[in-house]
Image 1 (cartoon, rainbow, N blue to C red):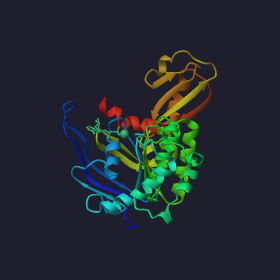
Image 2: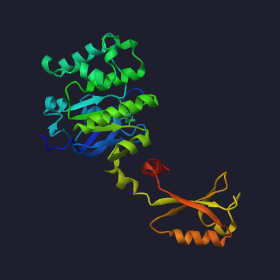
Image 3: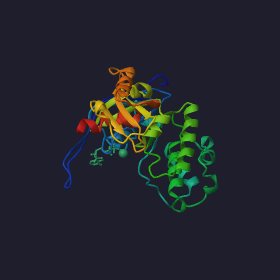
Image 4: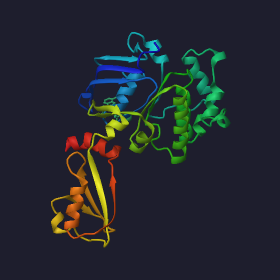
Length: 313
Ligand SMILES: Nc1ncnc2c1ncn2[C@@H]1O[C@H](COP(=O)(O)OP(=O)(O)O)[C@@H](O)[C@H]1O
Ligand SMILES: [Mg+2]
């Protein structure tokens, strides 16, 4: 079903049953989500939002409640085999059998997916992830970063059209992160749909073309990165006065403004309603002369906060 979306989720719910320690938890409260083929899709949200629950349902690791979940057009419940074959999942937790070597781990995984010997690419995948020299080392001897790369390698053995990475760079150093993203982008360029959760917002901002934000088990936004960023019409006008100032002049007390340590003024305004020329006129009539000025756009973090934490406040 090459024309079906990568992921199609309709009114998905999930309730974890209550236990001795915790009451029942409504982790997903009717999620609708369609992820087109060919995207690099970011699923963001604070801890506990339900991201891993959603991904584990896609992976077949957690049973869904109500609703419909399709991967490349295949229903996870009635077409389990095809659905699983369509997806590779890199889980958030590193849990691996440490008694195998990376090569054996990949061969086992390939066997599990029914990839015939002639079609296996274990060495190629190890090499792509910089693990070929660890081919025959024991997994328990690998560093944390190497284990993470091995998890990605395992998710790729059956050449899935959709790859999902759940917090793949948590606790991974910058250099390795860059390597991982280079490789993920290469897979994407070769046609793999990429879905990732991350709480590094800069990462999502630089990598993803489409972003959904989850909060308390619901999708609160789902759009292109550009449209998401333009949601906030908040801008900041940063003015450097000829003479650095220490306090906000009385005449400007009606503005939402801050003075920096270096004596600049940062004025927050709404691009839809406030005019820059009006603001500048106010600044001048307060007796300040302007040496330099610039405007700052909101970043993904601002949008994220406005859609999540600000709602709770
Ligand atoms: N196996 C489980 N049993 C009970 N509650 C769970 C289980 N897994 C997750 N939860 C709860 O479901 C909610 C969503 O968790 P999770 O999907 O892991 O969120 P995220 O990945 O966005 O941090 C949280 O409140 C979490 O405590
Ligand atoms: Mg998670």
